[in-house]
Length: 295
Image 1: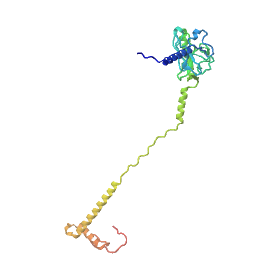
Image 2: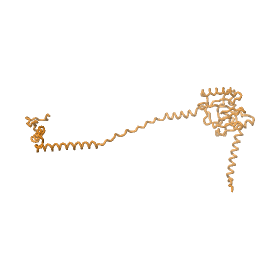
Image 3: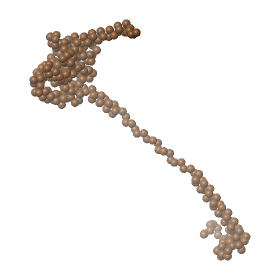
């Protein structure tokens, strides 16, 4: 059993298709005007080649126009320009151009105010024709001319190129920003604003890490060294005392050494007489002196 599309969906599809068809016809069946307010042509057959470009809508119901119908097949750009395809049989050259607008007064924000004054190098009044444009290195646009006849293409292209080069080198081009023509480079403005913001911000101070704490040296080694040294000295004193006392009690056990005997006798005299001084031979020093002794 085949499933049927619900009636409300069929109705919705029909309405969407109808809306698209009406919109397409409305865009095709428009009258487009040059900047001076003159219609493209009084002949309906010529005007039918032009269609409104929805990408150029400014919100007021007006549009830029391009030759989107066969056999020209222009492409509408979002900036309001037309990308024209080369068609030698129709005398059309390839390139970007400012075309026409649906507003006869050209006061609508949808109408691209580019190359609408002056006279091009072919002697055509700019506001009475379409104007080819060329983009300069800085992003601005300079006017070239109305589409030149193909039989003079080489000569005219050379002249056109010289004109465009002079316009670009002298900074006379105009910029397109959101469908509006301006003399200010939007890219340079954004770059300048970024540079100004960066310049007004305070410099970031480098982060300085605090110096590491000094290495902690334990006093255990010094304490241990002091204790060991003190104990060793005490042991040495005890051993020396024990040794001398032993020699005093048992002088016969010691070798007969005159120097050792003299040291024993000096020790005995010191214990017996206290502060009395003796020479190394055991004789008492005569006379008493107060104060320190001379060594």
